[in-house]
Length: 222
Length: 222
Image 1 (cartoon, rainbow over the protein chains, first blue to last red):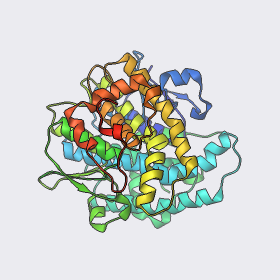
Image 2 (image 1 turned 90 degrees about the horizontal axis):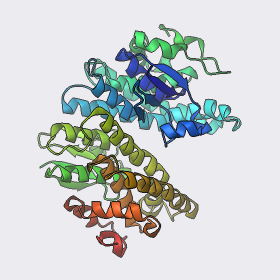
Image 3 (image 1 turned 120 degrees about the vertical axis):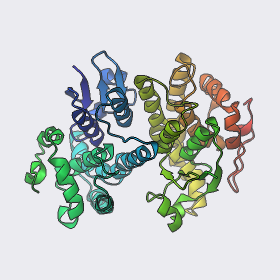
Image 4 (image 1 turned 180 degrees about the vertical axis):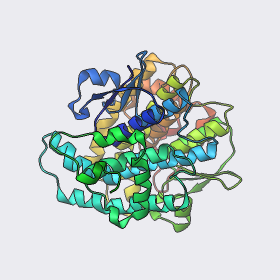
């Protein structure tokens, strides 16, 4: 069975999980705490990071965007990046926006302080870091609103890896109850459409030990 | 004429310049200091980052990997990513390694402290940050050595975007004279082969105002 090494609140792992689900590919999940630096895991990925995907034939793939590009090439039936080169560049620009920028500005601060620091036993969250993440999220929700007012989905008319990358980040932050949905109705409408996709269900069932999500997290009408 | 908005010591810009050269595509360079947040430039890329490529027909492309993937799709004659999906995934894994990891561990510390801080008028370099970059570089040169001992080029038998991404980072650090070449003969051999490619010449001619490169920087026999 195809196996995905992942951490439940890693947005880059969630991105790959969603891509696999959208392509209707079977897989099993192998949970990893990447900061544990397990030597067996470092053989699979010398970067020591999740996600890592191992195919049935033993082929090892690492790094979330390399994995998603691979999935779109190896299993082209339900394309997730687009068709012509310019549109594909726009999808990839937005994927990088959320994978790198949103992650550095928001997810890394909030999930890093509130979850990973605790799991690593590194003490209490710093309120200045959390405030920075909560401040930055408004800029990104504005950008999601701007895009979803002008396009059916974030990168254009079709649902794409841009929607997957964005919702993977946002779902991690929403697990902490940190999204000010009431102030961003357009972004909420877009996320409600993602949440109602059957492919999104397994993410909404995730639980991190000792940290249950808020009530609205799995609610389709939030 | 195709135009690339760039900053001379941005490794991600150098990556796109090398890809354009390898594909024998004409372009002109438009220098940008991205921290100046020029409103005209923000219209081209709301992220405010270089590189941005504007095609002859006005098509705007932003984010270095999105641009390189676009170039490989729009101008497929000299492919830079590979042929089969698994090999392409390995190229992309290594591109991300250098674009993200090497950049965060090394280039951002060294170029950030020694060059960008000065150009922004933010004072003197902090020696602790520089030491961290100089410490981390050894790990990455070990990895380049490991790969180039086992493969003709970093991602396999063919020269690829992985070599481009790696040499783009290393060239920026080498401009500061910060690469301990004597300790890494395998990495030096690999870099000497890149430096001798005609496509690499224009990078070696770059000068940053007030900061000339060391003598060996443009030397093919270093």
